[in-house]
Length: 147
Image (cartoon, rainbow, N blue to C red; front, side, top):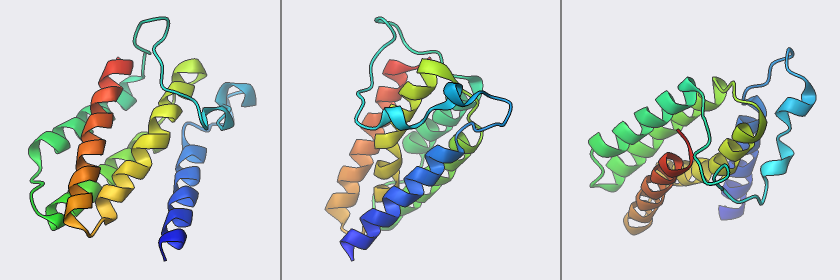
C-alpha cells in the first residue's frame, strides 16, 4: 500500500511539473524540465534568484497559511496540508518563469511538493508534526533562495 502511495505521489508530482509554465509560444529549450532531478538548490552567484510576482505571491500565501492556520491536531495538520497543496497547485498552474531561475524553482518544488502531500495525508500524529516542520523549513528555504 505504501509503495502504491509513493508511486501515485511521484506521478502527481510529474504532472504538476509538466504543467508548470508550458506555453506553445515558448521555445522548447526555454522550458526543459528534466534537468532539475537530483540537482541542489543554490544561489545565483551568491544572490537570490529572481522569481516572478505570481510565484512570490503564492509562496507568501503559503507562508501566511503556515503562520496562521491551526496545526495542533492530526486533523488540523492534514487540513493545513490540503490548503497548502491547493496553493502549490495554483503556483504551478500559473508559472511563467523561464531559464535558470525556473530550473531552481523546480529544484525547490521537487522537495516541497512531496512534503506538502505528506503533510496532507499523514495519519500518524508524530509523523504529521515532522512533515509540518519540514514544510515550514522548506518554505523558509524558498525565502533564502528567491526574491
